[in-house]
Image 1 (cartoon, rainbow, N blue to C red):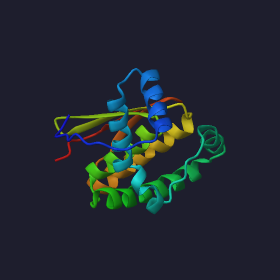
Image 2 (tube, rainbow, N blue to C red; image 1 turned 120 degrees about the horizontal axis):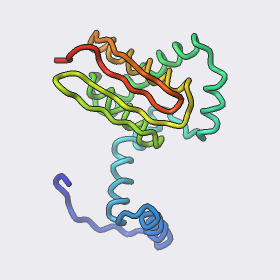
Image 3 (cartoon, rainbow, N blue to C red; image 1 turned 45 degrees about the vertical axis):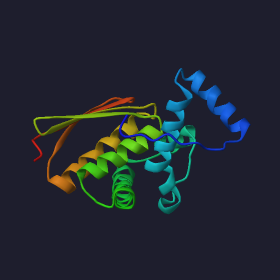
Length: 174
């Protein structure tokens, strides 16, 4: 853990009891869970109102995605790119590749979508695991492709399935 500080808070008994139950069911300590909650708040939830984000059930998202056409995927990608830009500016006070990738990682983490990326020799690789179907795979692949093209003029290659997206940059990014 990075620098940490011990603090004390007064928390209603029923709230701490629920947190303790949740930590136990996830087989983590209460301390770890509280740190996750605080981290999520700082990195994501505190910006929610300014960004006008709405919590949406997964089934609703799946239903909407099933109805989307190819041209609507492109439009959704453009809208989402603008939202990622706004999120990066609001939360990181900068609009660059790192801030955009952090924003996508936060969205995925909060939505319990697996998101991993690595850099080797200046090339990026991503694996995104989800349960939202092929249209979501096309969408997220297009979004990351757009981010790399718009910010670095670098093309990407993608392999998609209904539950997994593998994306690699074609060239190094300096």
